[in-house]
Length: 215
Image (cartoon, rainbow, N blue to C red; front, side, top):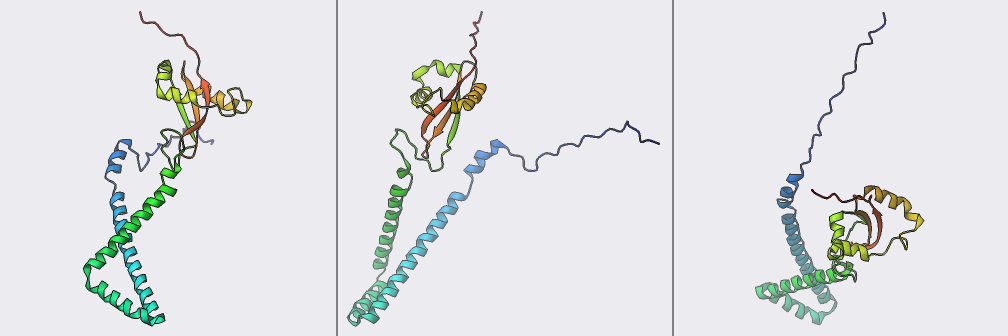
């Protein structure tokens, strides 16, 4: 006997994700994150370990010089006794180490840090890992403000990607931007530099619609 064809496949219920993401909890988690305290503790440990290593290196250097240069042994022994018996000398050396370490950090920040990544453009934030592309949707109300709005003014001042708005190499991108653009508005694809500043643009205008007049 043929099996009954009236058997229907029961749909398998979808199981919810075991780790639901609640966007409202993200700010609270970020505020109570212990990473800042942990970074501070690590910085203090590195500071003290660096001071210990430097003092040990100086002690070893003085002992080596005392063996190589006999006249230097008396000076080294006197300095070692003075350093061990005088807490003020230890404090001075530790302060010099802290000042030199802070100076090194400041020098590194100026040469290789946030300030060195800034370009010559006004308002550059000097980001380290900025996004290469950025999509902006500008509606009718925003464009109506014209040059009075900073976002519209910044986009209007940017050069076109590819040298002009009629470059055929970017026609596919402009077609996609026209699909995403709001009515009587535009979709703008911004090309950003490594520091985060926009350097070029592509535009796609949305469909033109007449304004509705309220009775």
